[in-house]
Amino acid sequence: MATLPQIAVLGAGIFVKTQYIPRLAEISHLFCLKYIWSRSEESSRGAVEIAKQHFPGVECKWGDQGLNDIVQDSSLIGTAVVLAGQVQVDISLKLLKAGKHVIQEKPAATSIPEIETALASYKSVCTNPGLPIWAVAENYRFEPAFVESKKLVAGVGDMMNVQVIIEGSMNSSNPYFSSSWRRNFEGGFILDMGVHFIAGLRMMVGCEVTSVSAITSHIDRTLPPPDIISSNFKLENGCSGVFVMVVSSSSPKIIWRVVGSKGTVQVERGKVDGKHGYLVSLYSADGQCKSTFHPFCGVHEELKFFIHDIVQANLKQGNGYEAEPRSSFVEGARDVAVLEAMLESGSKGGTLVNVKKF
Image (cartoon, rainbow, N blue to C red; front, side, top):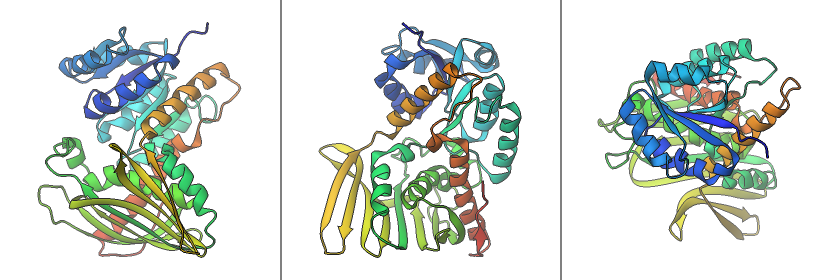
């Protein structure tokens, strides 16, 4: 029987405890979780206590020495970096330089300059193109709802208009509301949350956003600025659309809608039979509507693909391996680039801004 690949998780915050550990447990037959690292011993031990229910052999690592131990451990082939946005890129590159495959949480980076520097550094450490693997964990690209909606959009004729309406629920009852790192970088919650919605948009339409013109504002003073963005955008296929995001609304609603000459496709976040997910609806030209509900499973799917990729890449070492393209760092960079352009336009009172290409 083949030895299971060994991985480490760097980070021990809310998302690791509530999503990574449970989702990794669902595919625990595919790998061995060796370490969970955090900056503090207390935080690391707290996450390990939860993980031991599924991974009895998992060990604590913390601080600089613990990070060095992980970097130097040649038995580890994969790592998940689930840390504050400001430090993820540096730590990911440190692991990549040590020859370890990395799946890093979104956002891919906090700015365009950081992306450009990161891509140059990554290119310099690649032994073969795309190896070691640097994946960005953007679960929306792995949600079945967006996989299905992309196929449906191809069948509604010429694309006429696109609408993305996000009325979020980032208030004091949300566990991420008090997150200090999200409050301490340019773009704040707009950038951190927004990359999800841009990923969904890009997935559905199957092409890139080329230019934007946005107005931003700051209404909720408990949130960092801006907390509202309204943007027109143009796609490379010539179609126009609108992206509206309110970080905290009293009546949350999340919708993507693509209007075609022969029908309309809509994806709406919702809840059915106690399960959260997305309702995908196809409105045909004859007035009929067919809908399918897809429960959330994107985190499970992206982690499963990553484990598969690192195993295959390890087996084909030296012969090249093309990892799942939806997870690529460049895909995550493109999400950030759209939001950066919108935020720049907003800071300039709606000036047209071209989206940086990666």
